[in-house]
Amino acid sequence: MQGLDLNIVNAINISDVCFDKCHYIGLQLKDAYDFTVDNCKFKDIELAGLAYGITAVYCTSNGTVSNCFGTNLRHMFATGGGAVDFGKPRNMTVSNNTMLNLTDAGLDCHPGAEKIVFDGNVIDSHDGDGITMQGTDCIVSNNVIKNSARQGILIQMFCTKEQNCIVIGNKINSNNKGISLAYSDAYLNFGKVLISNNVIDSDKECLNIDGQVTILKNVSIVANNMKSRTYQGMRILGLKDSLISNNIVAGVGSVDANLYLTGIDGVIISGNFLTGATYAIYSPVSMSSCIISNNKIREASLTGIDLRGTVSNVSIAGNSIDSMTSSFGIYCYLTTGDGRDINIINNILVVSGNNPINIRALAGHIVTDLIITGNNIQTDATVALYIQGADAGSIKNTIIADNIIKGDVAATYGIRLTNCDVIHSGKNIFETVLAEKLMSGVTNATKNTTEIWS
Image (cartoon, rainbow, N blue to C red):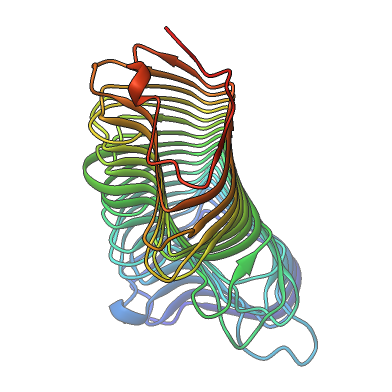
């Protein structure tokens, strides 16, 4: 049985209709304007792998689809794509619908559509993504997405004009990933993306951003509550001029990192609560012009903040790292490039096992303009603050001042330096650190005579 194919219609209302066992598409809207679809059912379309409940294409605009039910489909609703000679699909709201047993995304917005809103829908038990959004100036809000085999929500930058997108207030329980944001290297017109106030419980990454070829920018990730069971809480590969703020990211089980970041430039990471991972913040390749501030880090089994590769113009300030199971609190390891303009200021570190602060340069690399001031450190490790260069004089122009260092065992060194040149250290306070172990390995350095210990 064929479904209903409406072409060039205006001011139409379709309600209380059951589209059952249609051949390919239950309801097709072509060049429809000012339409309402309400309280309809779409089920068991015959071409199961290609089945659509509703398609809205060409110049279809100014319509709503609400309170409908769909099952055993590919997509419950799809728009965008197709010919756009005289316009494009736009200004549509799909809300308060329920869909089950889908072979692909329940709601699918292709490139070319704009100002599409998916709000308050329930999507359960599907083999693909819950929602796919490739349109411009779109909103995905307040949806409940369960048991997704791929992503709960997939945002893809495939538009030929600036794409702005808001993803807010959704609840996602995913068998794979929660929210994914991806690029298309064919189109470079990025707008702004806001991912906010979502609750995500995911078997893998709660948030995945893939900008490896084309770095994404202007992304705000704010006030989300995330729980992941494997891999990472957030996996971000390539991000610029963005904000990661006030999120709760918890690891349950074997979680590598709460925040896994590579290719990060100009990103503010602030006010997040991170717990239950091997690394709370892990950047294995490069980070530049970033601020890591006022985060609360608890129970990171290896490192609180771990930056490797190349690190330049990075401020680590006002963070609280309390993890007596950690080996390191703040660890910067320059393995593929140099470290420049690294500021570690006013952090509170309660760390066991190894060094609360460790700055290390591999052979052939240097660290310059390093400032470590105003930190409050408590540890039972053998060295509280360890700065080490592989080559003579590879740590240059460094200030270590006004830190409070408390060692819980008599063997604790306050500060230990290796191959450091031009070190300015003064007015640090050492508590329960033996006087002869205040500073070790200082060469070519100036030391303030007002060091205090008790």
